[in-house]
Image (cartoon, rainbow, N blue to C red; front, top):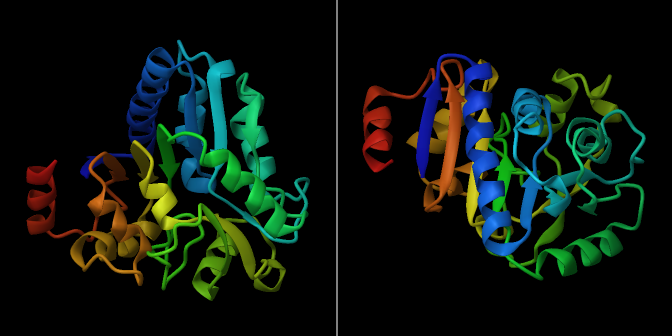
Length: 254
């Protein structure tokens, strides 16, 4: 794993997008198609804007999966991740090969179809954030580090649900669904490369737990430390609680 720290999140986003666009172009050159997984949430705004503005990507040769979706809300809902991807990625590119998770449909059928599709070939690059509670996708603590199922139904803990309210996706905690479809931890780790974009001071405590504590289901995103081609992008705010010793160790390992 490589840790990169930038002064501010726009610089972070541009650097992450440069790596992501190279990974996509290389996959298309080598295999004729790039299979990607896209994250959502307010932490990804600047990254996706920079990525969709990148030159030289043949988006018609990009096959898109996404990490997670609330159960019980339609694609038209303001908080729907399907809607988010339509507005911030699909609608800005020429992506036509899509595997979206419909939160309003039968979740078991949605999981069956998405799982069948994702198993057909490896994912080239996964974009992922890290939650305020350390979650990876919607795998809240304690996360399942064992299941080989590509997607699963998960319970959303209160910290996760409160984050969705604080980011403005819902008006009250009572409006946030309690269940979601999420890509599993092991499926995320199967990606050839992982790019994790994690700006802002509200993520600082989670980052400290991820990189200064043990790799643990209680801090799901700590598992990124075990992936040989994961790059985590931080700004000064999200990295603020990391100790000098941690920064030196991570720099040496990178």
